[in-house]
Image 1 (cartoon, helix red, strand yellow):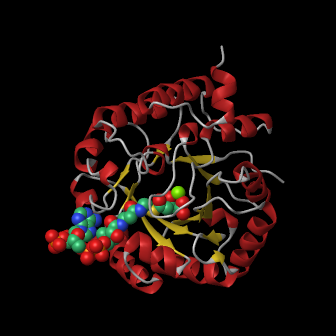
Image 2: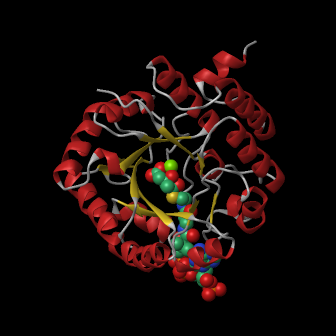
Length: 298
Ligand code: HMG
Ligand code: MG
């Protein structure tokens, strides 16, 4: 059984751009976000309030956020700690995301913490955000495989998901940071989480497309009852702290599949493709999305 409606959580402006070497001007980022909203995306992750030395591309969060804050869409932002939360709240952010890791190697590389130290760092962030009526997403990275540790055992993923849920996160997003998941693994993880009291309806899926499995994995998740899917316009993306991470599932590829399945997204595919083509020109290379390439050959 497939859902009748899917919510797309657009991550192009954050996950998509965070790995770009050349600094993208703030005005271009703002224009990108405006165009995404115009194409019908309703949840657009805008930026990260992380340490600027860790992700230099997003060091302009203070300048960018006010330029897009009045758009009639949800604009979640990443915050790793209370310092990040302070910065986001000062600008009026109403949705934040903390980002945990299922593996020790990535927790260290991405957050300079152990898995449990990172969870301890998030606890006051989530508590304060909830007290302020701020919506909290809990990302969990390396849910399937890790570049240093290999395949990640399901119980290890379930434990951290449970901790994020118990902490008060409103939704979780299961990250396949390096794109190694396959549909059977997705079904097995969703079943284990359901058994641990975290149903598919409380989960989003976040697939990177390194091995070309992102769309197949998404379909498997939809069949299990997941209705929130993360995607990046044009398939931009990667994580600077995870070697071999490539772009996310392209939003266009997702919309094409959902449209064919008769699932409503409210997105204007033509406008979205035009946006990604425009962005690709700014970044100086073609979009890796098959759908963008197919539809932009006029
Ligand atoms: P640290 O070096 O351990 O920081 O980094 P610290 O807590 O020791 O603080 C050191 C200094 O940094 C202090 O300044 C703090 O104030 C400052 P000092 O007192 O020395 O002058 N500082 C900050 N400044 C601005 N904003 C902040 C902030 N925090 C501390 N928020 C830290 C720890 C978490 C800060 C660092 O590791 C970090 O910023 N990491 C972010 C990494 C990141 O953004 N990665 C990409 C996002 S995750 C991802 O892409 C995966 C995802 O897509 C899902 C998937 O695909 O799996 C979500
Ligand atoms: Mg990601």
